[in-house]
Image 1 (cartoon, rainbow, N blue to C red):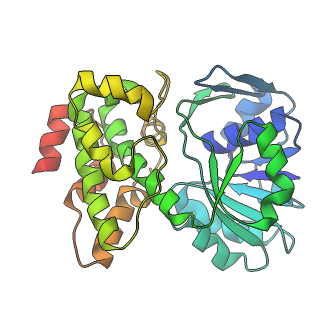
Image 2: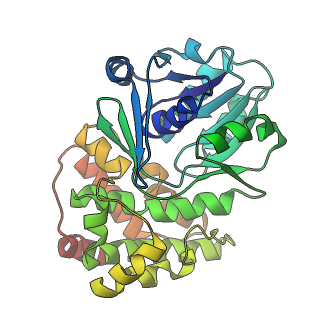
Length: 329
């Protein structure tokens, strides 16, 4: 059995694709998600036109739902990783495989420290998933699943392949995780814009905000000796230059660089909409931590952390020029 632990947007989508193609999956998540899935089942759609449905979904709301699972996909928010690890330690058998499909770069370490008898594998979900309500989860951007290479994953590779989400295995997952984090530096910008992802990225001022945040992070990564993996048609080191292009040139290039459909939103926007804490400390905050470890500062990403913390209690929408001026101060 496969268990999805922390079944929100990413968990319901990935687990739902597996279940829709015949793999037994149990979902463990919040009561509100359990109620929606019980009432409507799961419907999984994507930007390429896929439309899959799953009825009679096993959905539990306590850690016991993962009892007996041979593979656990951890998709809780990063701040809940330590608690999830403690809960899983109480129900998993030795040798169970645990994959962290979470934002950030340190979650697998947290899981590994608390699950010494299990096989913990770092993973990464490069695409965006929007919870549209009533059990509908939509993949709005391109990408497959990336994981650290591990022989323990071999029995499950076929299930992911059939689900249309093949596992791309890497000898070193850290550069891949940092590349995803560089893209996720847009999460606060999108959330502050209060616009769909494609509409936000169509405006040069917002793209310039992302460009300065990425350029700051790339300089710090170079100083730390970390070279981000290439996830898109353009190497990450050149991505800020692409973002700064005039709108007409960016539109011409964007289809080759990043596929984004009109429905796509970021998870940080969803969190602000629902008045939930965001993952800002594990995205832009990770850049701030890297800077501190090098004896440097990261003022642009630090400002985005501050603005999202303010938005968590007093939300407002920012125009692109307003936000750019704030970041350039």
